[in-house]
Structure formats: structure tokens, C-alpha cells
Length: 245
Ligand code: UDP
Image (cartoon, rainbow, N blue to C red; front, top):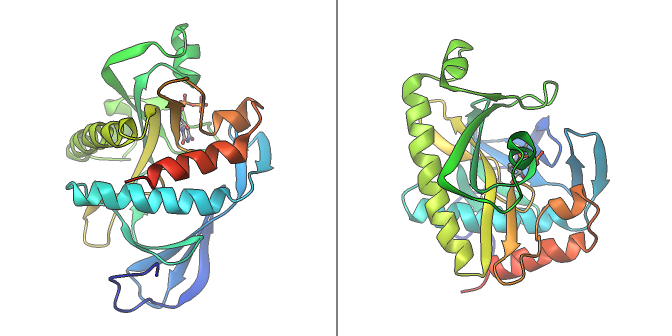
């Protein structure tokens, strides 16, 4: 039922990489990986650790749904198919170590850094680059820094910017139709062996802030970060709404 449209599912082979929330496996096909979503949760650069029951199942389903929606609207992604409750088949990419954060309303580290209230609308939506490095706590950087450090070319940054703004418009509409406000989120991109730029990683309540449009209730990882309670329920509620219509 999961891998509809995929003629041949390659065999899962050796573990390639284990991150905080996911494992990535090599497969019998060199240009495909299998990603497995875990229940492990970390916050504040892994200083806070825990598990969120069934988070992996939710994040796998939510990511698969959102990446297919984006792909159908012209955003190239690494998703090939959802394989099971916790696994998806993806195109093999090398992740560009530039995390893209997009913000529609002030929250989290942005609100703190600039001394503004959470919920302040940001126009235009703010796009930030951060170096993907847990050891350095993902420091923000500008274009010159990313280019001078050899992380991306100016042309790649232009493409990342255009794609991320497009993803923001598409996801904001998608969530609004499901009574959720997309406050901010983080994207990662990768390059295939032939140099194709693809949206990769995940899009889930771990990587997005989502507030109920009516009540403002937080339905994302801030419930875990800030000990707000009802963490599992919030993830399940996002899954329910994403799967609507
Ligand atoms: N984010 C993420 N991974 C990171 C850093 C941020 O997925 O390593 C997401 C986070 O969930 C939020 C957005 O990016 O939706 C902006 O996060 P922020 O910079 O405010 O950091 P935080 O407050 O989470 O420390």
C-alpha cells in the first residue's frame, strides 16, 4: 500500500548515518537511500533529550505527504515513496551544509535575538542561512560567509532562496486550508551525483512551528522544548489535519 508507483523496491543494506531523529541506510541501488524515522527527540542542540511516542510514524507520514505535494507543485524533492510506517525511499543526495530557516512570524531564537514578541508578523518573510553544525550550534551566516567557506556557490544560494520562498508560499497555503499557521520552518537541500539540487530531509512538527489558526495553540516541537505537555497529542493532531482532503 505504501510504495505505490515504485516498480522495484531496493533492499535495505548497511546503516550509512544516524542522526538525532532519523537513520539513513544504503540500498542495493547506489542512487537510492532508505530513511527511517525514530521517536528520539532532542532540543537546544541535543542538551535536552527524550522520546515522543510514535513521532517517527507521524513525521514519516507528514514528510511524505508534504514532499509529494511540493513535488506536484514543481519543487524537486528527494522523495521516491513511503515504504512503511517508519521508512521512506529517497534519492541519494549529499546534503549542502546550509540550513535554510524561513520565518513568517517571529518566534524562538529570532524573537530572542531581536527582542520582539513571539507572533510578530514578518513582512517580507525572513530567510536565514545557518551552518549545519551541532558542535557549533548551527550559527547564522550571510551569503558571503557561505560562499567564502565553500559551502555553496552564489548561484546555488540564489536557487536555494527562490525554492525556499516558493516552498513557504505553498506550505503556508496548505496549512492554512487545514486551520494551521505556519510560523517558521527549516529546510535542507542536497545534490545528487549528477548535480541536481533537491529538497531533502524532513518537513514535520520537529522542523516547523505550527499554531492552531483559531486558538493559537502550539502544535509542534515547542511542546517538548518548553515542557508544555500533550506532546504526542499535538503531533497526532498535525498528522490528522495534514491528511485532511
Ligand atoms: N529548526 C530545526 N532545526 C534546527 C534549528 C531550527 O528544525 O536545528 C526549526 C525550528 O523547529 C523552527 C525554525 O527552524 O521551526 C526556527 O527555529 P529557531 O531558529 O527559532 O530555533 P529554536 O528556537 O528552535 O532554537
